[in-house]
Amino acid sequence: MIRIVGGPERVLVDAEALSGDTAQALARLGLPVVRIDDHDLTLGGISVAVFGREHPAVPHCTAWYVGPGDAPGWMLATVATAAQVLNRIASAFEQERAGAAFRAAGAGLEAPALLPCDPEVLRGVARSLAPAVPAVEALLRQSFDALERCCAASGAITAAPRAAPGEPDYWFTWQRDAAAVGFALRDLAVRGPADLRERARRRLDGYVAFLTGLTGDLSASRRTVDGDIVGGYGDPQHDGPAATALLLQAVAPDASERFVRHLIEIGEAPGYDLWENAYGRSFHARNLRRRALLRAGIACAAGSPPADAGAVGSAVLGFDPLLDDLHAVSAVVLALELDAERWPVNATWRLHHAHGAGIGRFPDDANDGYGSTGGGPWPVCSLWLAQHHLHSGHRAEGEGHLAFVLAHTDPTAISEQLDPVTGQPRGARGLAWAHAELVTTLLAAT
Image (cartoon, rainbow, N blue to C red; front, side, top):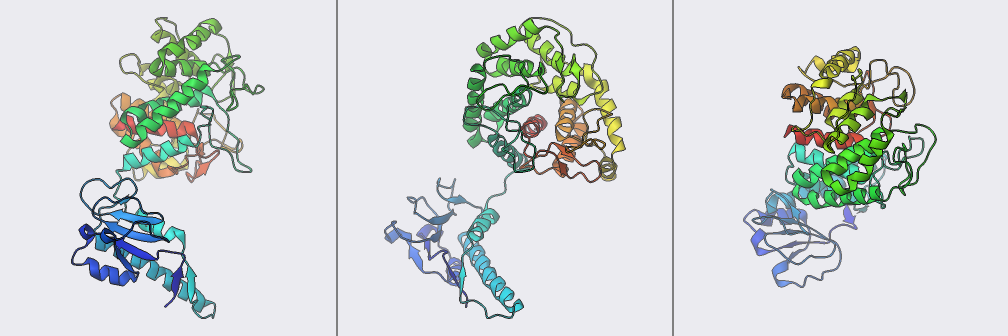
């Protein structure tokens, strides 16, 4: 038999884990068995274990807890029995040996006597034995992990993780994107999985501290993770301080005053829109400013919304049903949904689904994530419309847009755009903005 080396050298058990069918599973695994009840826990080497009660941590041991209640912190939770855990481990190593023998025979060689243990084997067993996680919780965890990859040590929240060679570099802070992340972190700190709440709160507190240290023009479009203004293309962007003001009014009111004063000072000054395409008076910026000033007791108007998804985004960021009215952008939602019918990926989707589609930025958009060849759906825009419908009581429509995004994106690294024909990811991956909107949409739907 092929001997696997560098893997578990023994299996540890306690009396509580033993049952009638455990002995057969232990024999199949073929490792020396150590009854932990009567043994010093300072064992050397790698081991696996099944325990039915709490024990001090054993170094280099992968242990499954099969007893009552929650698993101790260092052990793996499972709904399997001790025998099922042991049989799964035995099956994994049997298949490793069979695979090595098969590959050797295919190459006209003798089966190897020794086979190095692949660390992924035990990790795969652990994944397969883990209790099922509700779909929404799993998605929230995946998005939180993605958001943490966009959090710098300084407290800054970047638009995307550090880029690989040849990919767009979004390791900068745009206040607009970061505000969406801030609201998602706020919601996770209150309604997210229990073990994530404190972590989400710490990340949010770090970003608030980063904001209080900003110097220079608060409408600067882009900053480094150290807070330095980058300058150049796309300045100024007034939606940034407006989005920041809304966030701080919700989570740190005293810190919001400086940004509110800035919004009063700039008035109706022109700037670049959120897509960094057009210079003028952007409805997105004006509507965010209107909402932030209204919360400060100052009334002003935003004008008529254009057929641009940004108009919807400006209405749902940090949405408060007691203060905010979505009626003004309802016609924009309809126009964007009608325009989205031109993309083959949506036609394919509607063959099997009554609701939902991939939504683009605006009807004549030509950007595809890499060039200007005809546009396509954006997960961020699709999620904005999902939120609009959910807040408006149109649950089927909102869940349809959410389902489209989940069906066409990698929940661990959502892309900036989608191919209009295939629905495949395009543009930057792991976009913080998109993951934030997914968190907000999922929590709005529950």
